[in-house]
Length: 235
Image (cartoon, rainbow, N blue to C red; front, side, top):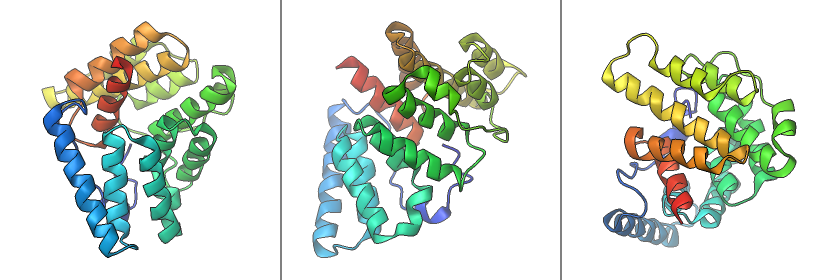
């Protein structure tokens, strides 16, 4: 997600991203230890919002989606003003199979972050799961101000007005440096893969999500999302 737009108060609650796949034993051990530490903090201080946020993120990285949702729900119970900003909750709701709640979360996030194509994409994915791709396209959240390459083409892809090749061509255009190209290709492959999955193209979905997760993902929360999704595909 476009963290430049998200409230600093929420971003500061985030923990360090997992640098390896969730299935890696050392990574899982580290995440389990982090969950245990957050649990101890919560036992001592049951209204500690930061601890619930940290544990919710780490539960997500471990693939424990219902537990992640429960912790993010607690964050919002304790501090209701955070709800519109909490896109991580929307993603956890998607993976927990709570697609209608997920769609509502992304609709609320639009009110504070209207120029984020990723928010529109995740809303599309939630709606597609309950009502199909055609309906998801009809209610696609309009976005025109996301300057990140190739997000404009990702928006058009989900709208049915561009192809995966258009997204990849945009990502490679303009001779970006190595770091920028890697970032662009991460988002290109992740959202192409998620789009294919929504459309029922399992083989193409897996190809692109694995490229995003294993070749291009960085050490941030969306990189973790790609790694978690890839792990789910391999099960």
